[in-house]
Length: 332
Image (cartoon, rainbow, N blue to C red; front, side, top):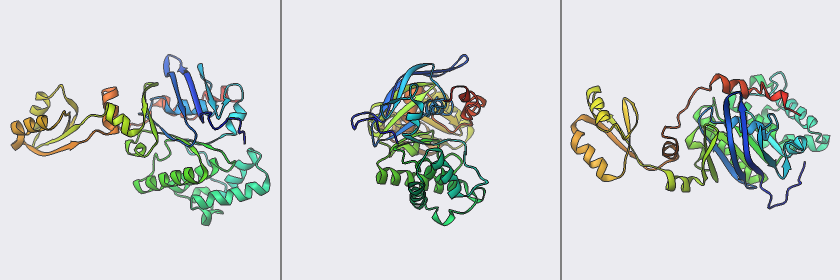
């Protein structure tokens, strides 16, 4: 493994990264760094530029402008050296389902030149960590979605990488599998001193991260700890459930300048107890339920972009480039 960076060198350094797809600006002069040992989240909706950024850092794509370093290695000048420092779990499945768990991990170790003895030992260690030792000789096609994700994490670490990139690692998993996935990620980080960079559009998944980078339309809008982001950009929200459609229409019209969403439930920007009390005094008998939400990362995104961060289907462009259709032209 390439260990050219010193302890003071950021695990990831990005300066002015820009990427275009035709007329679409996917990344717009993005700059930030990720400290060693940090759990760092890129938070934004589909199409925000998160996957494009990860593909550049993994040397699948080349940036049009700017530069990036992985553990002190310039990814444009030495892409192979950069790859030796990272493990990657892509959003789309990338296991060979005709092979067993062990065969998938062994092949990955061979590609990265891990010696046979060290490879065998590392494979058993990683299978144990993700609780797949009992399934080591099972064909991947027989595993559940959650088990496949866990195997992909194990594979990403077989070559003793110290920086782990996870692109939407819990998409398609049920709530229980998502919780277990994050448990494995945190366990691996603590036990192996990993730096973890994860992209997600699930708000609740980034609350436990060291820092969160909010990104939308290819631009970095804010970077800080979850607590600092909520203190600086968060907003109290009031969720109103009217008793009938007529009441909902009146409330929405009366508070049009505060409305965030109206789809049966009305979500309003609030500014404290006085606002809530005034609304209730005016419409109390016509309201079924009121719920006040303290500032959250969801309200941070709302404050920064003017819209909610909601689950969205990936666009055709997102899917095309997630598969690296153009990435092959630049891969070294």
